[in-house]
Length: 421
Image (cartoon, rainbow, N blue to C red; front, side, top):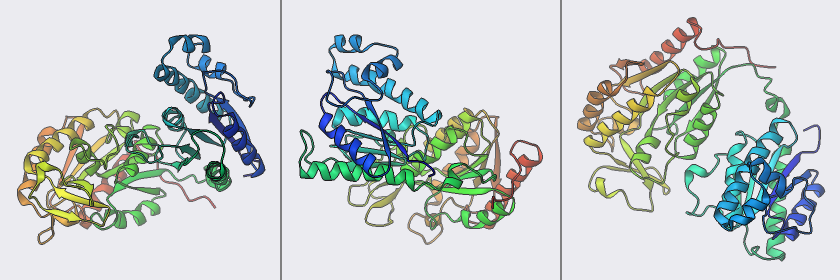
């Protein structure tokens, strides 16, 4: 970057002045500039903030006095989280900050997650937390690009462990900002971006056939791994209108959500592009299985059904035919909400590599249930293209390109552009 990165440093100055002051000095020493935001409500601390707690409260449409008078710490921090999020988004939009660093226990982390989600994907976000990666933090609240560090031994006062954690968090925030390639940050690449989802590159392989043709057409392809956080990132960008079009071909995160799996991208999967009015080509890829930790227990509903252990972290259990029909209804309902052009490609010979004959998740009865139910679950606004092919066949990729080319001819999707030099 051509200037020292400005880090929005968020903390409760009333209770953590020593820690906030130490972080501020670390950021400045490492080549950044700290802009301190006080989100405390108990009083003043030794550090003079750049953004006061009164300003944060005002941004939330209230006053610090009213927040304090409420007497409830949960509602108090919820109000401060609202104000901090609005101010952070405004500061970034005005070009006054380049990244954020927040610290806290459960209260500070709760607030920090709201602020981090208010900033666009790609803006460096670091949270130093006593509950980093804890099961207390629901997956849908974790920004997909969040950097989180455990604040061990730092709940009350500075010590060698605390100083080490604080210094590393400051380094992560400054380093993340300095590491941004200015050319990409300014988006000089004129190529429209196609957002695509896939389950790795083994079970689903269409991206290998599509990448070259899409780039030859002048598009940049971004493929998201649908193992929870990848779907979160995809939906975040889609909802912001970042993509020229999407090819959302891997939907097993939706199955995971319907079955209560921890491998989830939240309740809004398959909704972002539709809400933004972005043209979307969708397929039911990998909707024949529910994921769970390999080291855990598969869902009781599917006990005795086929299982594929992908590695020591993630395994998948084949869902039953009734759930296949439930998934079809969920897909249809979400696509019906879309405000933009929507096409569903239905590959009737299979929807991921492990469902082929001889593979561990081969289930003709389940596939037949999906193929039967999906067409009846679609609203008139969703165009169905049924294919006598497997999702990994060349015919599937060709059908997706045919839809995109038609949309370009009709002016629904911008034509591709040459790559920036």
